[in-house]
Length: 222
Image 1: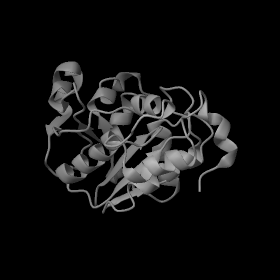
Image 2: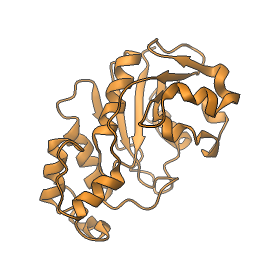
Image 3: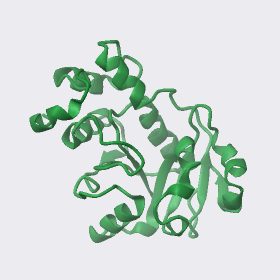
Image 4: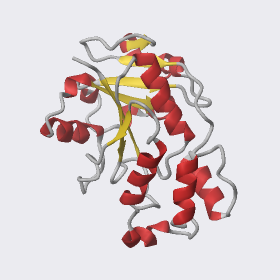
């Protein structure tokens, strides 16, 4: 059974921090594939500013020259919140062996795992790969979540048969989608914050240049 990395997110927009998460997890865990999954309705955030087609397009553009990375629309089919447990169900319905699933999460997001739908059962359905984010080193999760510490394993190492929580200490870009949207709205440079192909897409479609970019939903992504 070959393990596959899964990285979900709103990707509003996709930025270098997201790319660093995927790269770090793939390198530490030896994944042949990392699948990026844009969410339709993020359960812990507000409605995305950019439409689902635009967000899918930005991910596809960002990873087009990244070996081993691909994008999936599995969550965009779902009208409800994009819960990890529902994503696993949808992947299983497509014939995906969910026993091989390894969800990649930034340490800043994983510290809130107790608020996730179907916790703690979700931890027994797949592996979790927790990657450091600025201010939140992955090893700190043992202190933040002591009840889960006995399930945490330092990477690099291959996934094991029993679902585990693998901690990946790696440098990831100190950037957030909120900051990118703020800069885009003000016409500021996005260089170094998002891949060049994403900068071009944002400019081409004038994303985030109005208070509510959802008004552009009907334009789609090309």
